[in-house]
Length: 91
Image (tube, rainbow, N blue to C red; front, side):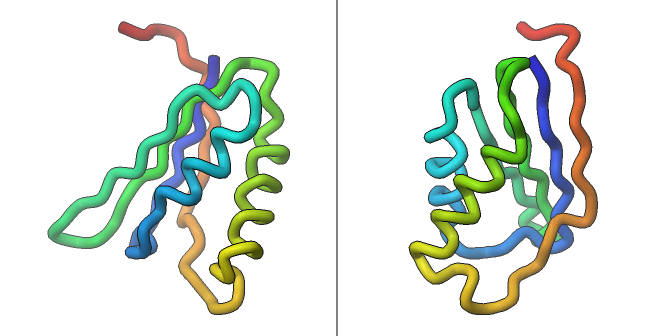
């Protein structure tokens, strides 16, 4: 299993459930979470994947949904960083 952690400064403030729903259409996407610091508006996007998932395929699914709902029609912040981690323990 691996995880993708993206740092947002700030986290977009729209209803981001569409991102998680689009990502989870790709087989092997296990869970996804958006976390926001209410004081700063900064946040984290954390998603967990089976080892065989291609993150590029997940990004494509999100891009297709963004185009469908018109989210791509105006500029939005991008993540400050994105890191892929191998999950070594879980509980």
